[in-house]
Image (tube, rainbow over all chains, first blue to last red):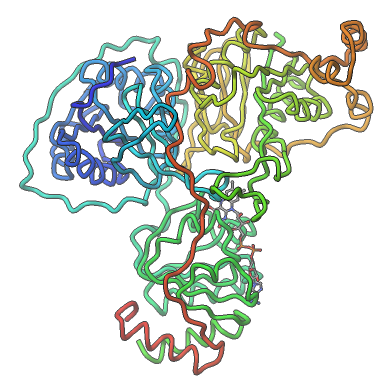
Amino acid sequence: MIEVNRQGEVWVFAEQHLGKVEDIAFELLGRARELADKLGVKVGAVIAGDSIKSVCEELIQYGADKVYAVENNLLEHYQTNSYTKVLCTLIEKHKPQIVLYGASPVGRDLAPRVASKMKAGLTADCTDLQIGNHEIKKTGEKHENLLLQIRPAFGGNIIATIINYDRWPQMATVREGVMPMPEPDAKRKGEVIDESVSLSAQDLPIEIIEQVRREKSVNLKASRIIVAGGAGVGSKENFRMIWDLANALGGVPAATRAAADLGYIGKDYQVGQTGTTVRPSLYIAIGLSGAIQHQAGMSESKKIIAVNNDPDAAIFDVAHYKVCGDLNEVVPQMIKAVKEKV
Amino acid sequence: MAYKCIVLIKQVPDTSRITGEAMNEDGTVNRGALPAIFNPEDLNALELALQIKEKYGGSVTAVTMGLPSASEVLREAMFMGADDAVLVTDRRCAASDTLATSYILTRAAEKIGYDLVLCGRQAIDGDTAQVGPQMAEKLDIPQITYVEQVHELSPEKIVCRRNMGNGWQKTACKLPVLLTVTDQANEPRIGAARRIMKFKNAKTPAEITKEGGSEEDISLMRDKGLLIGQLNLDDVQADLQWCGRDGSPTKVHRIMSVVLTAKESKEVEPSAQGINDMVHELIEDHTIG
Ligand SMILES: Cc1cc2nc3c(=O)[nH]c(=O)nc-3n(C[C@H](O)[C@H](O)[C@H](O)COP(=O)(O)OP(=O)(O)OC[C@H]3O[C@@H](n4cnc5c(N)ncnc54)[C@H](O)[C@@H]3O)c2cc1C
C-alpha cells in the first residue's frame, strides 16, 4: 500500500511489443495529459523491455513529461510476474496518484496483479475517465479531484462511475479505441529516467514455448466509413453486398458477433463490446438488431444509418437515418445510388 | 499423480435478458427480476477441470462465494461431475469488490487445498476478469490467463495455449498454477441424468437449517454424501479488514441506465427516391464522397 498522495503523477503503462509501442499507450497518454493538467501534476509513462530507448522520445511526443524506462533483457517478453514487479517497485518509489493501463490482453493480465499486490482499487475496461469530486452522503465527507472511472456494466445495460478515495494509486484499464489518439508533437520536451529493477528466476516462472502474433487484417479503428452486416444478411454469399457497399463508399466492412460466428466474415471485423470499438464518420448498420453489446462498440459514430425490416429493432434508437425495409432491396439500391453520385 | 482442482464459479444475473422491468427507477439493476444463471465461462473452466481429472486423475471441487441461494450453481456443478462443492457465504462478504472477493476466495482455496485453480475468464455481470489474477497474486502462484487448451500436464509442469486476441502463446510453468479459461476452450457437457437424480437433493447446511432441519439432519446428509460444504469468514480465518466494504477500495460514485438515442433522426423510405435523397444529403454534408 502507498499513502494517499494528491500531488502524485498520472501514469500510463506503455505497452510495447518488440520495441514498438502499442497504439493504446498513445491513446492513454492523450487522456492522461488532460487529467494531469486538471490536477496540476506531471504525466509519467512507464516502459519496460529490452532495447526500448529509441521509443522513449516518442512517448514524450505523445504527452509524457517523464518516461521511466526499465531496460533489461529479461523483460524482452511480457510476463505477469516480472512486469508486476517492475510496476510495483516504481509505484512504491514514485507514488503516482493514478496509473492507467490498456484493457488489452496484456493490460488485463497485469493490472489486477499489480492492484492485488498494492492493495489498490482497479476498474476494468473503462470507456471514459474524468476528474471530479465525491461526497459520502452519510457522513458529508468530501473528496476532491478523484479519478472518475466510467464503464459499462451488466452487459452494457448500465454505465457505472467508480471511484476510490482511500487507497492509492487509483487504477483503471481502458478499452482500446475509445479515446482519440493525440497528435504527436515533435517539439515537446521531457525527461527519460533510467530505472532498474532486479529480477531473478522466481520472477519469470513462465516459459514461453511458442508465440504467434497476427496483425489484424483490417484496421477498423482508422476507418472513416464502416458498413456493418449482421445475422440478418443471411449468408456468406449475401454478405458480398456489404463488401460491395463498403468498396463503393471507400470504407471497410464490419460485422456483429452473430455474423462473424456464422462465418459470414472473419472475427477481426467484429465491432462491439468484445470486438473493436469504432468511432467513424459514418456507420451503416445492415440487418443487425443493435444488441447492447454491439452498440457498445459503435454508438459513438458521428452518423449512423440503420437498415432493418423490423421497425422495433433497437438499432433504430441510435440511428440518424432509419431505413425500414428489406436489406436485399435497400442495399443494392444504396450501392447503385452511391456509384452514380460519388 | 492425482491433481486437485478447484474451480471457481459464480451465479450471475442473465445480463443478456435485461428488460425494462429489471431496471430500478434510480438506474440500478434489480437483480431479483433477472433469471440467475451459471456464469458462462465458468462452465468452460469446470469442463476443463473435469477433462483434466478424467485424463490425469484427481478431483474437482467447485467453489462459489455468494448468498445461500448460489448453491444452485454448486448443484449444477455436481450434476456435471464435480466431486465436491463448497459455498463461501457470510454477511460480512457483502459489497466486496474484486480485491476483497479475491482475498476471501484465496483464504478458502488455501483451506481446501489445490494443485490447480481454474476460473472463467470473466463474469458477465461485472466483466472485470480481475478476480483470477488477483487470487493468483495472493496465493503467490503463477497465472495463465485466456487459456484455450491444456496440451500437457505432469507433476513437473503444465503446458497451455493462451488466446492473446491478436495471436496466441504456448506457455509452460510449474504447479501450482491458476488458469483463467475462455469460451473457446471446450463445449461444456450437460449434467448426467444419473448424477442429477443423485445430487438434486444435495444441500448446504444453510439450506437444511432454513427448511427447519437440525444438526442431526445435516450429519445425515453428510453420511449420504449429499452435504454441500459451507464456509464462513471465520472458518477460512479471513482478516476482516480485507473483506466486504472495508476491504474494497473501489466504490460506486454513480449508476446510470443506458438510454441510447440519436439526437436527430430521419425516417427514410426504402424506395429508390428515398435512398437517393439520403445519399445526396450525405454527400452535401461531406460525410461521404
Ligand atoms: C458477453 C457478450 C459479449 C458480446 N459481444 C458482442 C460484440 O462485441 N459485438 C456484437 O455484435 N455482439 C456481441 N454480443 C452478441 C449480441 O448480444 C448479439 O447477439 C449480436 O450482436 C446479435 O447480432 P445481430 O444483430 O447480427 O443478429 P440478430 O440479433 O439476429 O439480428 C438480426 C437482425 O436482422 C434483421 N433482419 C433479418 N432479415 C432482414 C432483412 N431481410 N432485411 C432487413 N433486416 C433483416 C432482423 O430484424 C434483426 O434485427 C455479445 C454477447 C455477449 C453475451
